[in-house]
Amino acid sequence: MIKKFLIIIMVAGLCFAGVAANNTNSSPTTIFGSEVSLQVDTGYQLANDYDMNFNLGLALFPTKYFGIEVETPIYNTGGTFFNEISFGGIVRVPVDVVVIRHFAPYVRGGETFNFDNSKWSSYVGVGVETKIRNGWSLFVDGNYTFDDVTKIGDGNWLARLGLRLQL
Image (cartoon, rainbow, N blue to C red):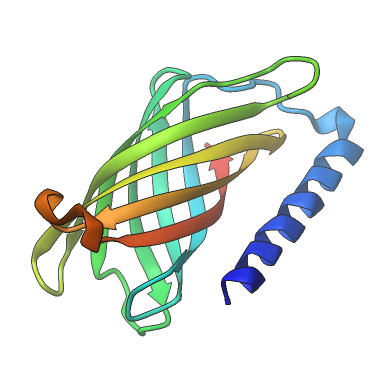
């Protein structure tokens, strides 16, 4: 199952890269800067009650380096909707040189509140974002979630792939 998910990520990335390469007239007018964006993503959790989920979120970057995000699941294979909300921060380092265009590696971290069990959990992660068209970007990241910092080894790994639309 993990291999299938990774293959899907690679194929989607190649498709989006091809679309971006063929649309040179629609290159992003702003590389990375102050922005507000709506994000939709899907995640694959390696150890939990469900495998796939779909999330909806809002990201705000007051500067090109620092941002905050709010996100909630809108569907998962366990059949629950809007059962948690995540709040987090993002630190990114935009790269825009001749060889690598419109690319920003980032680290993220935050807290998630689950409404079903009234518990908080934490997450940390690393990822990359790339602008693919004017106002659109693609991101992929890996995250580690844990309930108790003293039992950090008991957490779960999550891989995400998503799109951001700059508002």
